[in-house]
Image 1 (cartoon, rainbow, N blue to C red):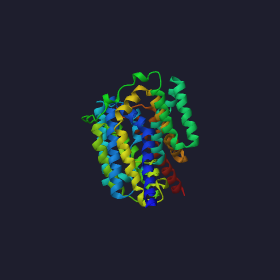
Image 2: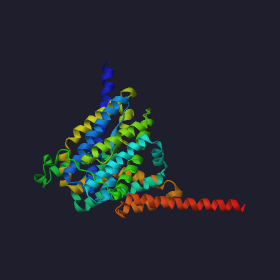
Image 3: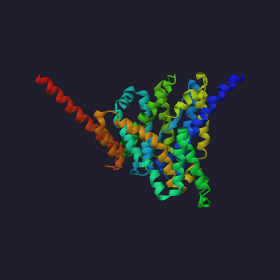
Image 4: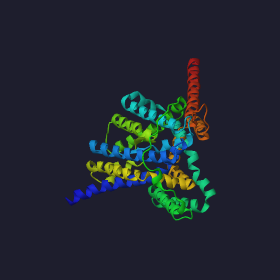
Length: 398
């Protein structure tokens, strides 16, 4: 009996750790992303609340029903894209409409298999280059913070580096804790706004514009699928579980649709933190690891209830919050750059995709991420066409 109780404690603890790491490492990215497409502080707090509660409920219900450690999360790379996408025509209401379209596309992916195959058909080099371009501007935020607030930002960066040398997974959470202490104990602490003023769910009536569908919904869908759902499934399968992808995509797509009018951007499978819930860290008994998904879901709901205060804090120290967001995304940026440059035959196309996406320049109201993917794909297709023609010509000469 004692051993069985101990075996249950391990997955419950792993789930709690997963939620703490995931939330503290990326809440700043979510807030910046929603503010980047025009959300007010109240709407951003509502989005953080909706995402936290709904993804927590999805984790609990799905893990309980399947008896597998299915960890559901928000799309951190997707939010990073939103942070640089710019405010669409029609403001945040148009962004909400785009979130709904993204959710519908994720549902369709679960129902129509060719859509899933289309996502996996996008060359890894281009998907990685697009993501690297999106993350670039956010990843230089710590440098900007160091120039504007050298002492505070220097302490945060030093904490991130030193803790990372000891335990990489703890670097961002502890750096975030240092940030909180610097703001709370700093000279401007008395002017911290009250989170209660912007707490609670705020409904936004969606609007639909073609430019937002192309410039926000489509890139957000591709990023969410390629950077979260596909690797998330791979991690779960790597640890000996075999969930059906279709129902997961339908569930997370519907969850995205439910949260969108309240400011939620995208809900998907957890990727990096999924390993904590599904791996050996969650205990030796694989049959009990589903408890980690339940405990992480409960923790997300609790954290979400503090969304108002979290956004109020972020509004008070935007430079430092930007620094934390940039530090949190450094690993994803490094992995994206590596993925973009791995295939020597696709490097030029990937480099063009990266440069266009990183430029932040919108054309015809459509974001740079979309045009980066288009430019990279066009170069790649032209190179392949020339290579095929040259091969055909050589064969004919023989």
